[in-house]
Image 1 (tube, one colour):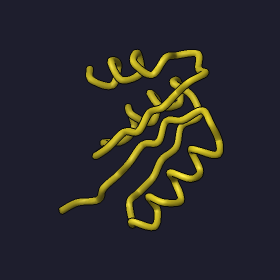
Image 2: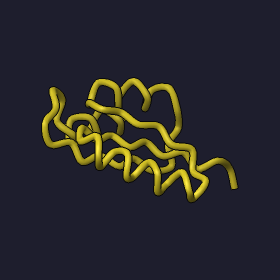
Image 3: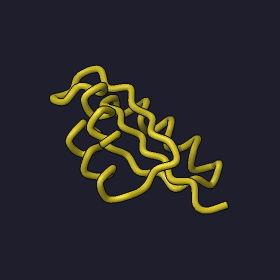
Length: 71
């Protein structure tokens, strides 16, 4: 099995860091995005096994980010 890479797309710093710390302990490769634009940039750059997106206050809403990621 190859590397498991996870994208955490979260605008809340505390939640983002909590998720990152937990997943790093599980030996996953973690990337974090603080907004939708950064999430799309990272998504274009890497192949992810899992994307966690809980945006509540962003310029690009999470459903739009996820729809763009599907393309």
